[in-house]
Length: 82
Image (spheres, rainbow, N blue to C red):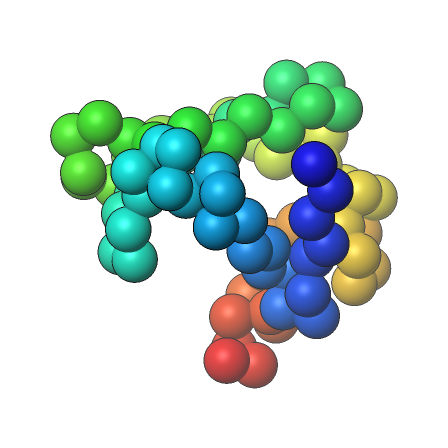
């Protein structure tokens, strides 16, 4: 199943998948990057998952962002525009 990111870097989880997994608006999902694979799964506790990201992991994200190459700055720019 293919989905497309919008200009804000968001994607829509197709209705078929939401129904199958019982997802509702406001549900918290966990996103994990495994190499070039993204894994998105419901967070069973309903609480946001907060993790500390090491500088080496953060630096490994440079160059893969759509806007310019600095993941933190690009994320801030995306959210400031909302």
